Length: 325
Image (cartoon, rainbow, N blue to C red; front, top):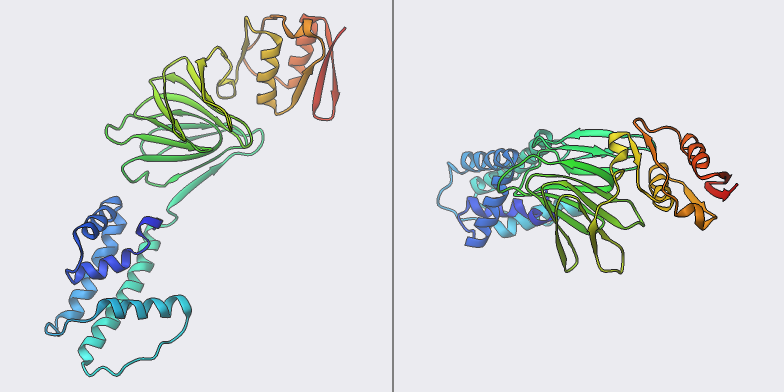
């Protein structure tokens, strides 16, 4: 159960006594509407309460006090001092109701199972996920995706660490939300890429449709062919997405056309997880044409880059340096 509903058992018992305030009734109803297993959980407790109350309709129990004593026993393991109650029927009702709650709790978690699903990708691994609403998520390497197994609630919430491309199914009235490194991206139906690796700026690029991206007090609407970047301590930057390779990892294709070596190197660094330093400014500003319909090993690309720019590459640890030949 979420933190918002951590006292849901108390609300249920008070509901059975008809002692809820209007705001508490609204909160309970929201919880009941959130998931079918919530409704079954509630009905199991109500059934037990009704059965055990058939033989005692004159006595009004102090539910708050009894419930508090029950919680103390559960959470501290201590057995509090008990008063002798002359009304045995009342005692049986409370005991049976508490037992019913315990059984229903077990039933709730048995039926529900894990409330969230987490998907992971390792280095050099990609994965395609189809969400319960029909949306598709293409996960890049070293990424983590977390979501409710039924995408229940008024919004379809996804939590991302790493990079993923989303093709979102349209669900009017139920926005699709991606939470990544303190940013929130909201859509109703579109396709876009979110890159949110640790210690790097968050970047959202839209392919179709449009998204509303929020971070702190900033909120931007991003349209097709545009991207927005959020870097720690800086104002968000929105500009045209001129990088045809921003989802090369998904398409498994590189197309470096009318791009400076400086920009080509940045794409290679992001894709292969290495560092490349161009030691000559003349090489850095060249515009070689390099196209691969299937992405090859890094060394193959560097060899071709050296050939068309008359340069040489040298590896030092995880860093490649490119010198003028």
